[in-house]
Length: 89
Image (cartoon, rainbow, N blue to C red; front, side, top):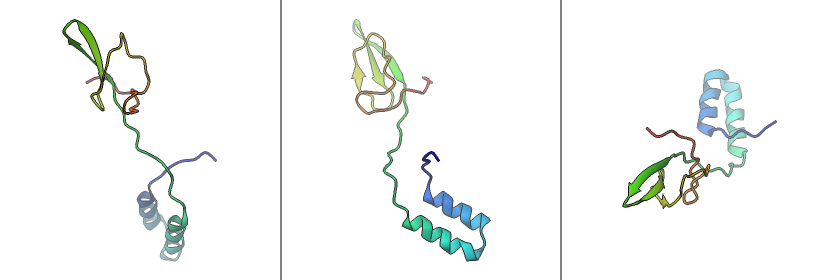
């Protein structure tokens, strides 16, 4: 089975909606006994092109850090780690 990270609060909500009172306590105890996963939220962004003087700068929409690149092709921002999978609005 592949790993899937879920919110414990969503599990608890599901249990209250779908289990009877006899089984809820056991399910809640099981959640409490499970170790917490070591996960971090994923930041998403896109490359923003701006012209300053004669140079073209690109900056990350998530952290605003500037990079002097001809055309950014990185899938992630090297400064903040944002995944560059959004489209400019």
